[in-house]
Image (cartoon, rainbow, N blue to C red; front, side, top):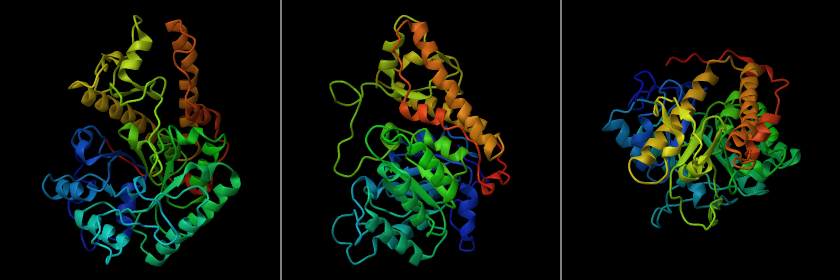
Amino acid sequence: MTDPSAVPSRPRPSDSASDGMALLRGRMLIQTRPTLVKGVSEQIAPSLSGLLLCGDKAARTAQRMRREEGYSGVLLADPACYESVSATEEAPFPENKPAGFFMNDPLEVSLSRQRAAGVTAPITPTGYIHAEDSDALRAAVLRMDGLGDPSVIFAVPVDVAWLRNEESTRQLIGFLQMVRGPKAIMLGGQMDPLARYAKAVAHLRMLIAEVPDAALARADLAAFGALASGALFTAFGGSSGLRHIVAPGEKAQTSRKGGGGPTAPHVLHPELMDFYLGDNLADKYGGAPAPICECYACEGRSLDIFISNHTPLPAQAAAHNIAVLMGWLRDLCAIPAGIKREQWWHNRCRSAVDQYPLVNATLRQPNAFKVPEQLDRWALAAPDSVPAALEAPRTQHTR
């Protein structure tokens, strides 16, 4: 699914640095691996969303999509170095390629490769920035300041501990305010990073409000909360592994008992605003009628059908997830930017929290579904004011 007006298939030398930002403004992209991009690209709303490819093959895939497949939608290619390498003071943009390229500057090489691929805007190959590693963050900021190119998206993959208290959040804000152009904050930590600290959601909202052209990726539901709060753009992970970052060298934790990989796809429950493994969801409903989904991908199917990873259930579950997300996005973008949009998101989260006891009562299982901590914190984060800069008229989109 493509939008002919979204972006040219090849970059033009005459394009200004602001062109890419204008195309990105107000969108929620879907972040995906190159191997899964075909199914995702067919489901997104082209005038409101776009694709954020992730991994070392992202630029190569983006180039193929532009040149061979004629994809014209908004398209980014995140090298995702932070998944495997940490940033240091000496190398904030580390090389994660095989030996033999040490004579080249990893930052310049990556940006050039992305531009040649025809991306909407290039993203820096930043390493993972650990908690309190202000030296690595400062080095990345100084390099970006020296680069002086506002068309480049500065990837800021930070441990969520940067948002644990106001002091560390203010330090992060101070660094990011030094960088011209867009800053794509990404959050690291096990499970749901924003659930780790009581004030992390409030501090994230403060960061979005005070850092010009702040964007947010790999932060689960916060993609909507940040967009409602005035983020330049956001990205929602199309798979569970892309909804947050696990620090390099750490093994991703899972809530599934007994360990091992998932035996069914993750399914978004629209009423409860959370993801569940399909077989777990079916078990919870048991003999009770499961919700009927009216999204454009399901068209009246029951949510308890995604019980295994056998074809075509994973693809159908992914299509359902994106369809629901796109529905929320259309609703959000129909609200004027500013306090009204924040209020809409707050009310939606509160309504979801209120559904949990009702669903559990219907199932006669008091603890069948538990409110996710991040959702609960968004429901408690009532908007009371918003900076004047966020009250500017929103960009008009068409379906």
